[in-house]
Length: 145
Image 1 (cartoon, rainbow, N blue to C red):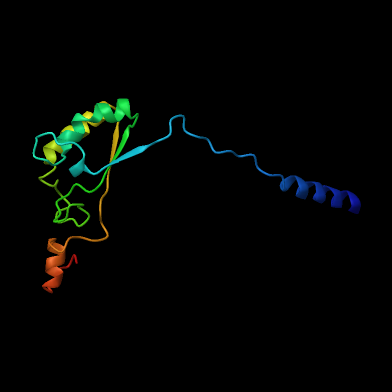
Image 2: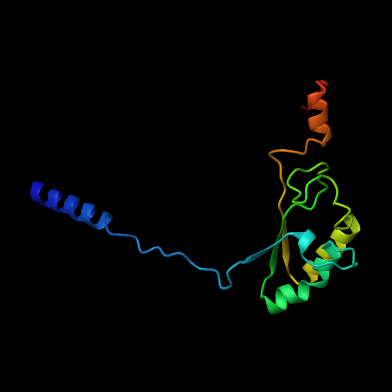
């Protein structure tokens, strides 16, 4: 009986050590994101600066020619710098790029093409011109700071 129990334990241990054949299931169509720096992309109004309407005009090119359905914008909020990574207002679009209506039009056009948009939202710091920063430097007390 003791040998049978030992044999059973040994069989269970060996079978428990078998490698799992779990494999990663690849999506049918891999997701690719096309990162756009709006300022240098496509100028729709001739002012020398790329804008949201320019991106909207180029959606057929992005999707049909490049085969891309996912777009990733570098920051599009107002900022004193060219790269927009030091935001002064998180609630609006930089006027050089357009306005909220331009963004809504772009999103509507993307939705009709089954495209997605990711915004690069810089939350770990702000511009020295942002009200949060200027109030902190002025030592103003605020319950939310």
